Image (cartoon, rainbow, N blue to C red; front, side, top):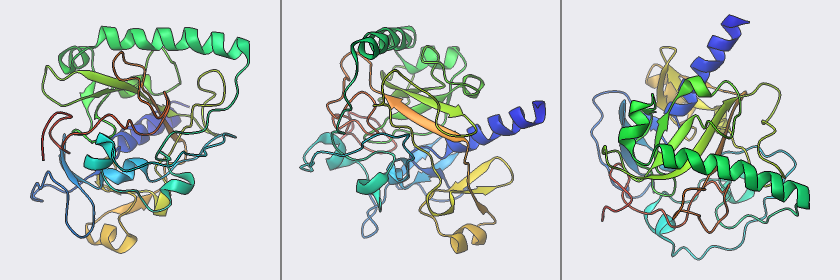
Length: 282
């Protein structure tokens, strides 16, 4: 049992490192800007350079939810500065881009969700900046990703879902004074998505498209889902499915109640420059 738990937590670390983009091997030049023909972007992250911010929105598995998105115009800060739509994203990606059709909730479900979100919101008050997050044991796992934010992770909180203790916090940059913009729940949950919040509007996602992430050396993520098997093997890695790892964003921070929904994969108001901050200009 302990071995299985440790494997699960190790897998969580791998998944965290692949959030939004994958860490490339050391020595790759940082381009911290949109790439030309490929439409990908690179961001500076805690372990090197990350590429393909679209990988964060590339794959998803929902648990009996309707994920019908509204049309998007392409003029939000997120759409202007973030990675382009991933292949298949509008069909079933982790972040169906746009406003997701909300399922009807009962009076009791709404009351329960309100209580849960009040408690989740209190987390943002505890960790208003990166400085407080790091002091509490959260570690940077990605640089800033437009539409999503910079991820700071505490893998010890990822063994189970607890809306009062998110395993990830999202910030508008990576400096000590960077401000919190959202929460992210990264959970190891064998057998399917966690029960999650009250109602059925919390759409959990995974990173298992195209054979999953490219891993090297047990705990090294060197390529995202979009990387093909041949390229991965050429870097000494192996494409790996992390079937029991589930993720959910929660845009509950005051001032960042994103218009695509509290549990949307992306926040349209969150623009900026990959690898820098939400406030950086091209």
